[in-house]
Amino acid sequence: MAVPKKKTSNSKRDSRRAHWNRKANLAAQRALSTGKSILTGRAKGFEYPTKDDDEDDDE
Image (cartoon, rainbow, N blue to C red; front, side, top):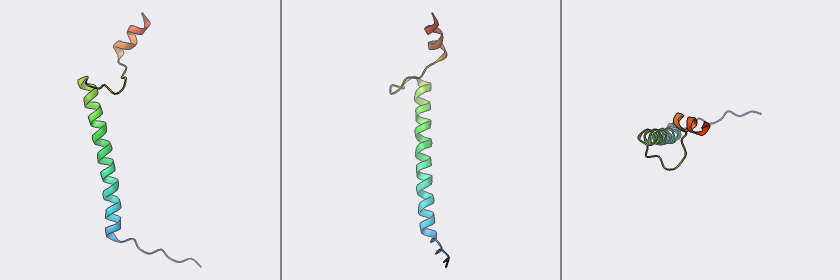
């Protein structure tokens, strides 16, 4: 016979939510940092094609 689940405690729920928020904030911070480095031209870790580069390849 089906048995109802026990209610999750508020502290457990809050802990899970805080962990999820922490991960989301870290991802947002990294994305913002990457965007800033691209805009300032200091990005060294990856190739970022620009419109000028695409036009030079045709010649």
